[in-house]
Length: 108
Image (tube, rainbow, N blue to C red; front, side, top):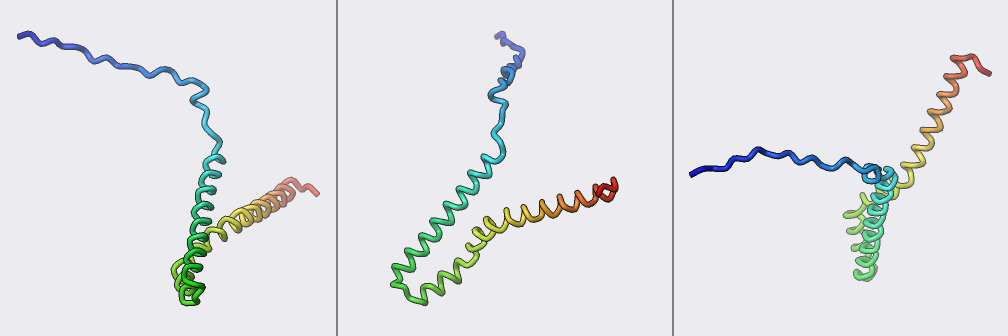
């Protein structure tokens, strides 16, 4: 009985096309992520309002919902204060950089 032997053949992938190599800008990913987070937040608030309505507006239900869901307020706080604090810090750093450049080069 004769066994046929073959040598392994390496198959090379085709060279990358420039159109496929281009990547999306990173802001597309962050926009999609924030859209997802805000969608979750809106549905969470809608669910809380529907639950409060179904509980006939009882204060006991309101206290339980506040106790269970208080941490959800962090999402809008982060979404609002994050960019504001970033812009404040960026302007403060740039102002400090300008002061240091003026001091180094003795510009007035």
